[in-house]
Image 1 (tube, rainbow, N blue to C red):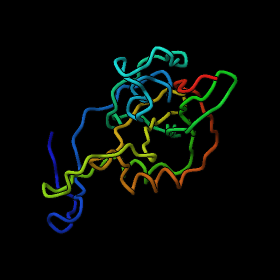
Image 2 (cartoon, rainbow, N blue to C red; image 1 turned 90 degrees about the vertical axis):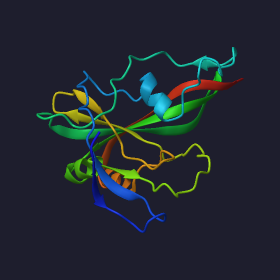
Image 3 (spheres, rainbow, N blue to C red; image 1 turned 90 degrees about the horizontal axis):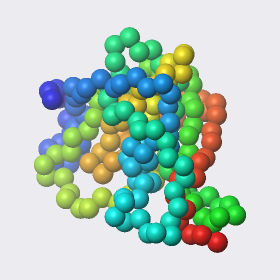
Length: 187
């Protein structure tokens, strides 16, 4: 993996932004925020060892391909943003959830932001990372509905870099849905 320094802060004080060479993403038939790999990346999937027998999961979805860079020839027209959705309540009880938001608009700033990642300096704090509510997973979708799961640049603790957050936020939300993931408290 080749790293090229694109800019740097003061040594030991600020993260550096570097361009990263990563494998190309695999084109899937569609984007799915409920794929096991997406849920795990968002911190919404219980491990088999940690799941209690009384907990119930929503129906399983197909595996997502590994996240990667935008392959040559793939032309996205929209983004599917997957985020933790908070608690959902229904007749069965309280569920964790995932929110899927389709966004459209000028994707150029997002594509530029996805081409970079952050590398914290070796003297950065070694504190443990807490689960972060701003975690995201992104799919880019083409005009035919095919999608790629893109590697989203984050800090050491999984927080999306500000350039990605700004670029996603600048896009228009055209559709939003929230889905149950895991029943955590039965009625």
